[in-house]
Length: 237
Image (tube, rainbow, N blue to C red; front, top):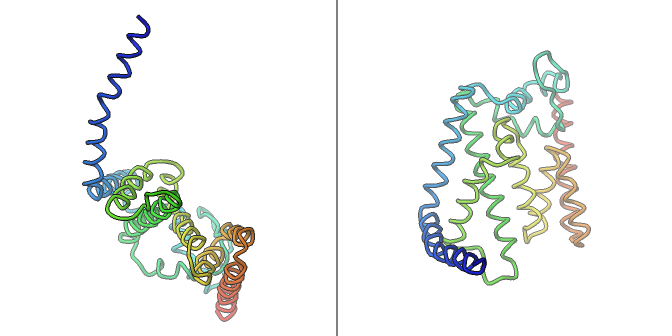
């Protein structure tokens, strides 16, 4: 009796496999629509919740460039979050202070989702190394779209988007850097990311462990150069 039930259950599972395969193929064929729908749904819910008010971290980024000029970058003001990034971050955020808040909020969200797409794309490529699936072509792009559409609603991505944080941009830069074939490009991604937020500097250790000495040197060089420029700009102001 038990064997019959087990066999019947297995038969039901295998009977569904063609349907699941067809559903997967349908999703891949319309992956851009799935991603667009997920993105627009997120933006709509975010606007229903907070309107045009800038997310907390994004508001801090937008206020940083003027504060760098008047010497109040690291002063804690009542009702505002403190700026806890290196001075170069304030220079990197310069354009944000020129964009109206009404446009900045959706633009930042869309760019963050694009950074998430790049993270997923590079991750799928890495997972395909050494296999027959190169992770490229239409199927690879479709999987990237679908994983990105799902990741928008998962933590920590959902909170990162909600607070308007820069983490997705930094993760995309670091992942692109450590997978770059040219050492100077690897150093550029890691070094500038570390100049904006110190945490990505741990990737320099990855270069050392993998004996990519030139990439590690480029990372230190770009980090030092960006930091020096920001201090000189701050002193000049």
